[in-house]
Length: 88
Image 1 (tube, helix red, strand yellow):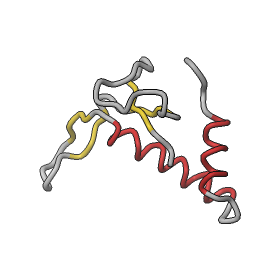
Image 2 (cartoon, rainbow, N blue to C red; image 1 turned 90 degrees about the vertical axis):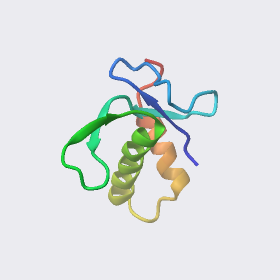
Image 3 (cartoon, helix red, strand yellow; image 1 turned 45 degrees about the vertical axis):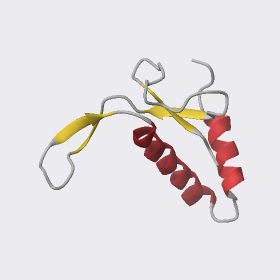
Image 4 (cartoon, helix red, strand yellow; image 1 turned 30 degrees about the vertical axis):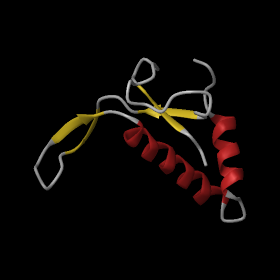
């Protein structure tokens, strides 16, 4: 399990983010433009961990596609954490 948090463009934690010592990685998650629900055309700003988690999942998928199935989920998480920007 990789615990994800949401940050804004200034790297400040979003009010709707996961928080606490178990959060391992942060991704954009404040006022991200997403498609409107139920077939309505256009975009709306959304915030929170449910917005940031797909960013992290897509990076994990890219790592897995590059390194291949011989890498476990734990290996991929370790790579992501090793390549992430720390404490900024």
